[in-house]
Image (cartoon, rainbow, N blue to C red):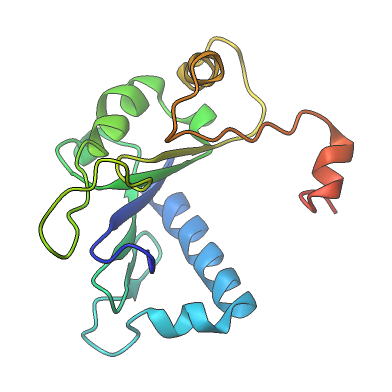
Length: 171
């Protein structure tokens, strides 16, 4: 958000409350670890940053926003520049495919009004999930991208416990 002025990014999970909780916890964690990140968020009253049990919206001083969405039919029609899909393996696969992925079909405009085709943020999709079943849409999507990696996709796929311990993902 701080590197791309005017970016509109979302975090989605199975439910809106779950996505708000995940987003709030991660932003607070980053702010604790990187104090300069906290200074980039507009915390002033009326500044746009709001959080509640099922809603989280962080307004950055450069005009970027980071908010949560529900993996639900009512999200249909919303447009964002990029998204993080948390626990996508447990989401309704039809909603994931027909609602959330199309949400990311617009590109960010630079400050001069142009669209930079090579900008990595544009229509970026980040899938985060735990192990699941091969019959899910998210697994098929992973297989597709492993076969044909595009410059906008980077896949980190820790398969075993030692790697996850090394990365500090297990305690």
